[in-house]
Image 1: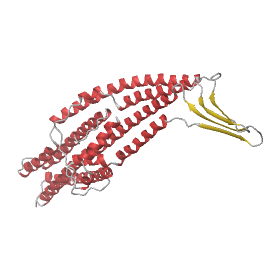
Image 2 (image 1 turned 135 degrees about the horizontal axis):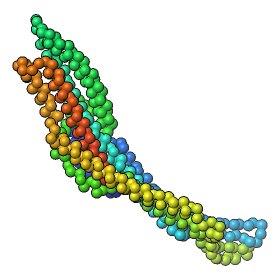
Image 3 (image 1 turned 135 degrees about the vertical axis):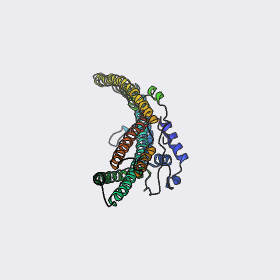
Image 4 (image 1 turned 180 degrees about the vertical axis):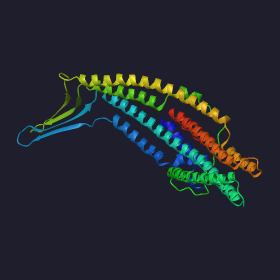
Length: 399
């Protein structure tokens, strides 16, 4: 898994060089690649890699030898010195290594999850930015056309009751549009700030971050056969607890140390020997620790089995939702085409084919339709990134 993250980072760095991220962005796809190579949250993955290497080294290290020396100046016993090397028996060291490997595996999975979260966050911001821009432009066009219609009606010397009512309706609708424009302006500022944080610099007004509205959505049926982050973490936790159980069993074995000894008496005679130290597991065989670890392991296996079933079921539900939403989007009108309905209504009005009040209803219908389509589009994008993220497959390209 660590190899996957490294390859991903190398791929994004190769596709988009650091200096390329300082040019003026025109496409959302280019921004997406840059954000994944520059986001500070992704940069922390390199630090966590060092943490894992340190954990593995610490688990594999051997105990240092112990030295004992005794010098007696007031007797003829002379000097004695011994060096003993503690030897871990019963699988203590291998158990620590197994625990460290499992903890590192969990750490890698969490890194993949972080990478997926960053990718999803950037992608969703890009979609929201495009959607808000479309709505913002449409609202400005509506406001402009309402102002034009209002001036035309007010310019008439004699106004019919219907025209006077239309003027009042237009003025009220313009107030509604003003509030919506203010709200969208604030939303765009917040989204822009989030995008700027990803690349570490401000976006200029000329950077459009264009992306096309999707009609041909990718198939994600194969995702349902893959394990999710939660399932993989649950399985890795079992490996960790298996290592901890092995460690608790190894603690029942005696502590052993062996090494040479040297003694020198007052007549400068030197004798050599061997020293062996060990504890006798007479009163304590660590039965409590083993029992506790075994209980934790049994619980983890039950939880992992339940998690696997639940996550598998959840993915199937999300895949179905994704297919349903994308099928709806394929048959729905494009967001850009909705602008044309406003222009068409104004053309009918100028030729006297529709009443002014019908324009307001056309505006409302257009906005409601646009909001409904954008809501479903956002759901589709969210499901796409979420389903890919579940299995650790972070899309390298913006959809």
